[in-house]
Image (cartoon, rainbow, N blue to C red; front, side):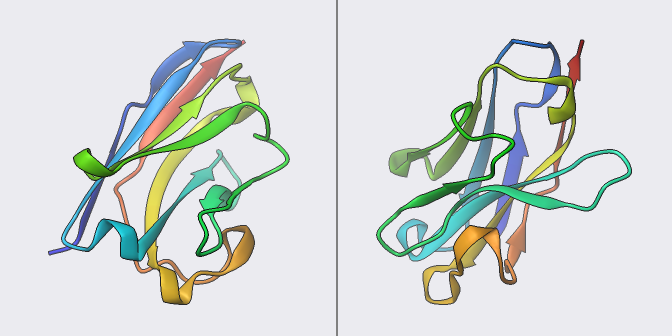
Length: 125
């Protein structure tokens, strides 16, 4: 079975850092791209950071650019979202999701086939 296990959320003060993890299983690591999505309270889910081309180029939304970084660890089947200089507006539930490279679209668009369960991030001011 395909599984994505997201973890690493928590409560952090503004300006702090967190590293989210997404452990994947059940599919070939290199045949799928993983993206990170966020759903803030009262808002729709948005794609914030995704590998969006077959050469590994990564998209970062304007709200997280220069603060968040996707890191891949092939040996551990894990993708990380390193989040620095966190802001209260980063608060939300964070999800990782996977899509086959053959279906990849830019800017976190398109239908992602597999989703993790979400992890809560709360940034206090």
